[in-house]
Image 1: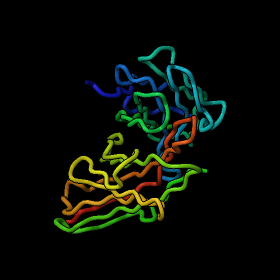
Image 2: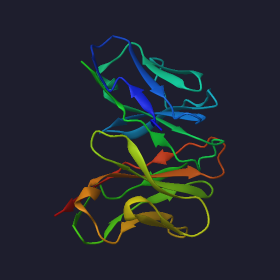
Image 3: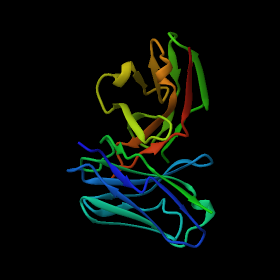
Image 4: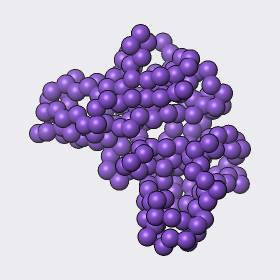
Length: 116
Length: 115
């Protein structure tokens, strides 16, 4: 299996630009998670989907962030407009199950975002 | 509220010595508990988890962890450390009684194994 695929792996952009991060979960998995990792705040859950439906988006920082999952094999995380404080590593993870919390999450390699 | 504490930012141990990475948790109900490892410039990798049953859980690469309900702890251990074990280790908890099913991660502990 190819594992969770994220693109791009690195993104450098200027403040005010739109950024779109992409994720392809493991085939057959029905839960998808977006995390952000920074030195200051550690690993934060931004949003997660179960069967393509957003279940918990309480971690989304503000209206500049949005996430979609149009089908079971693709999700996007969009930041518009981007700000320097959005610089972080963004991880996507997927799991298989009913979303009870006992499922193992499998992480992608991450997208390293730098906003200048 | 659910939370995880990893009291040590860094753990240093000599190769061949036993290692322990500490984790305590707080949940409203009963927990599901996980350990993940992150190598530089990589995503998190699953090591082991406690769901139910035997309190001692064995995982990948010779790691194990013991669930202690009275102390609300889930410390990660390995009898003999390797230099290749050097990485960032995360403990995570989910509330068994929650309908949301999300994981709460600790801040991570950087393990360095000296040759």
